[in-house]
Image (cartoon, rainbow, N blue to C red; front, side):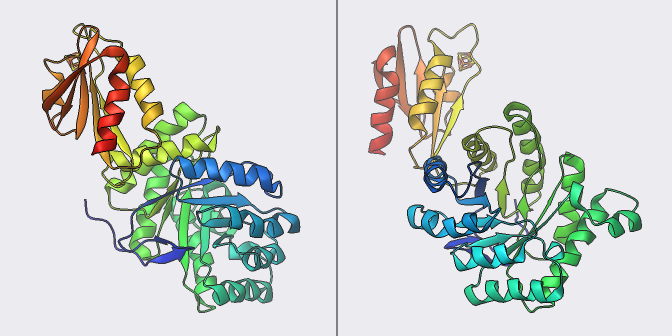
Length: 349
Ligand code: SF4
């Protein structure tokens, strides 16, 4: 699929847009100024492959905590600020790599200018985002309520505010919890500007349902070539957000990191405890960052053949299983040792 061409910006050392790989973001749910808990959570998110993290900055203590947090993490940090321009400036001064703030909410022109000037000095990008619930009243009236046009034009007004101050290190988000609306809004925006787009379905819901909604919405946009960075919003552990985001990208061939598991649905031919084996594999392979396709199939008759595109795999038999590479059987192993042997072979690739 051809990706839409966008301007490249840098969040810390991570490029967004242009032809850069699509990144997965998440947001901490700790009290940001509780530095130990925030660092711990960010490190856990790094472990599962989060590329960029965002935290809420609610007061000056949160803003000052950014310095210590940044010293202890390896991924770029985005400061999420609602209205207070002083907090925005403090966040930038303390090392935030990007601001999530809407210039239209900052207040007077002087305040907006001060924020943009501090971003300019350090080349800190700004994410401008309109959610379906935060469209300005005048746009709701002009475009007859919440729809793609009112979202797009409300966001564009914010974009123009920044552009008029000669700054264009911008990325844009247009999130709604309604999937078709989100798709339409991003599609429209992608025709109007070339800024990188941050995709998300907001307030997608609990983990299971939110995963499906996000996969449908974000997956549709990505398959249209739209989107440069993604965040899954789930009511649950942010670790799940990162895992879901990565799987969405992997399923479209847009993430060349980590293991992709291919496993069969089991049937009457399955003679091995396949569901248990897949769960064990999922857990043990989580931290391997090699871009490999690993198949875990229930029978030796169909398994290796059906999973030919896998780099390596298992085909279960009665109390034992075969390990195969690119469809060719390399050894027979007892059921209880299958996953550990598989991991050994993966480590040798
Ligand atoms: S791979 Fe074998 S066990 Fe799995 S669903 Fe297909 S036929 Fe059944």
